[in-house]
Image 1: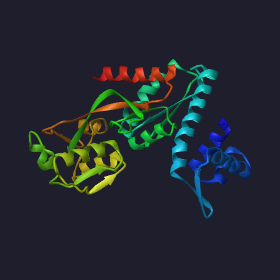
Image 2: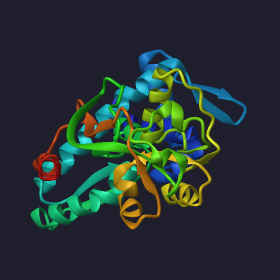
Image 3: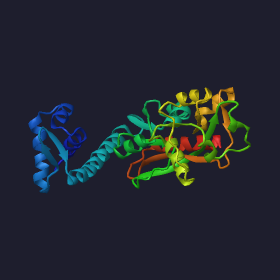
Image 4: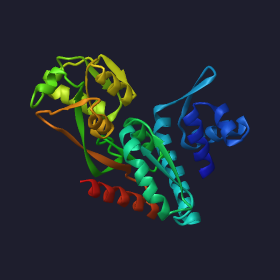
Length: 294
């Protein structure tokens, strides 16, 4: 078996289509089909089930994909390392919404003068998406707000942050010295969408407190939630970095919680990832930034 077989298989698996894989690889469909068949014959297994005009990976096919992806990714990393020797090429960074909005721009501004010929590609999405992208090797380093559970992801805390409870100015809860989550739960709750790191942490806190909260609003837009809170439509718990400006402007008012919701912001990468010097430099830069803000 050759690296070509592995690359073709990875492409077919990702697209679940011989046709689309052939188009991406600029190969004839029979060549792609033959490559998959050669793999199946060589290992004596069925990698795809063919149902009608579509193909679906078998359990063995899913396991084989993990190996093939690792082999192809490792080869690509070797190519970049040897050919560019750490000054050219691309660094792919992923960040959650909060970090991507308020921290990453400053990090990239500081980092780029260190490697002026290096292309830095950025993806700002939900933490769950960033984690999966690391596992798929489509991102090199991720910056997220939660601690990943997947054992294949290595996690390094680099900065502390907190979740902040907010209400409209003059809201009854603002008259309390400290508010509890159960007191907040008596009012309409406005929340980020499921899958966001802040939502996962908040849901976990509700679960520990044996509270069942059904949000009045769910939104991927923090600004939409903050605006609704300022209009008195409900209360919310959001990352402090995202609401600091509105609190200072008096648009919303911070509620002091009886138990602060602190958390670490984390650097993540695949445990088998070969970290080039430019990747290690970016990790050190993140850690230095976190110490500055402590």
